[in-house]
Length: 295
Image (tube, rainbow, N blue to C red):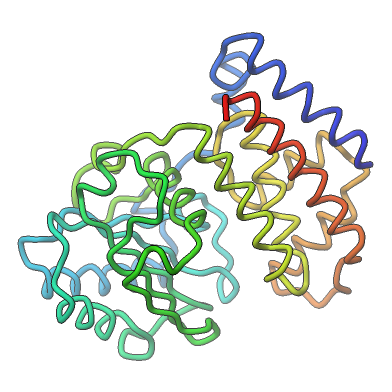
């Protein structure tokens, strides 16, 4: 299984470089492969109500400073699972708020003061200058994790949190962010170099090795990283899993197990050795793509 994955990935990455095309496949085919962004009107009811309340609190606290707010993550990619997925929102302000206002924002958006209807709520606030210009660091003003089944976390120091989350999130926000308020996301979030995104994906794979105790998110994130390394396009975890299974059918049972766990079904945990071998194989291919990108 893993040799075939490596062979398929090497072919995909090499094709991309030799052809000179952005994704290494014909443009028409890529339009079919790319997942459509979700519209605001298509948000699940519980997500719509929650995000409206969150933006209203941001407006009250930041008044004229708030530039925009966008839903990202599984919701924006059409892969939200009630009770299992998080709600991910990024906000952009014209200038960084003082410490007292940051604390007020955290208090206003934290569960249960703002009751989160699913597993958790992840909110990141950026200063406009830090998203309008490409940056390879975390670059946030606030990083808040809160919710009924999420370990609480608050940070005002971008150097204290792994940078890969924020590079990936900003790239997805530009391509697929669902606008809650403000201009279209591509007008605020600058394009990030492919090299930086690949490096962030590699770092995320390493992070999951030590933090994902079950292993299912390691596999699903590896599918997404493999797809991006091959084609550049962002995908939901479910979409990336289907893409990967189509290219390496022998990995189907492992991926299906991980999808079932993500959906909250009671199934046996994946074999840790199989998880490690698969993630290691994908990591090698992402690192190969990094080398080809000029690192």
